[in-house]
Amino acid sequence: MEKEYKRSEDSQITITDLMLPSHSNFSGKIHGGHILNLMDQVAFACASKHSRNYCVTASVNKVDFLNSVEVGELLTMKASVNYTGRTSMEVGVRVEAENIQSGYVKHCNSSYFTMVAKDADGNNAEVPGLILHSVDDIRRFSRSIKRKEQAKQRQNLFKDKDFVVEEYIELLKSHNAKIDLQES
Image (cartoon, rainbow, N blue to C red; front, side, top):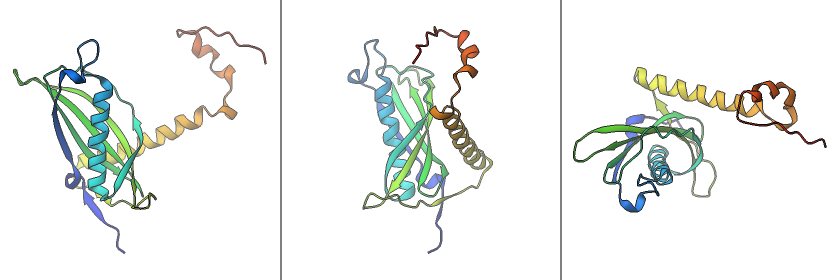
């Protein structure tokens, strides 16, 4: 069977939702957990559309809330497959909020979801590759590869068996922590 490839445009998803008072936290802003839930849904839809399989979230790479979202704003989430592995995909999600009265649009956050395709039996399923047809496509795919490499390096850097506490004591002194090691 010949390997299948798709353009990222073929699986892009955009969802817009009105932010209601029931979505707000105690300070009157839209709860970050609600926004993350919506982001996960749009990432799922995008990955499932690309792979034509049910997909699960394997990880979420760094979520920075840049601007708060107000009750009454329209929240738009745009999802696109940036990277494809054998059974996984990285889906980029961009979140924007629009004030309905003024028309002002603000970028609220962007994040990257690693989604894994599953077949009908729950096993990992191969996904179509990506056709990279623009400089932006190549940049996004390459950036995804670098993000994956950096995550692996961070994971390996602090493995319990290899961690040498003495190498980090000086680093900790300039931070809001007090070292009180108990002898074991």
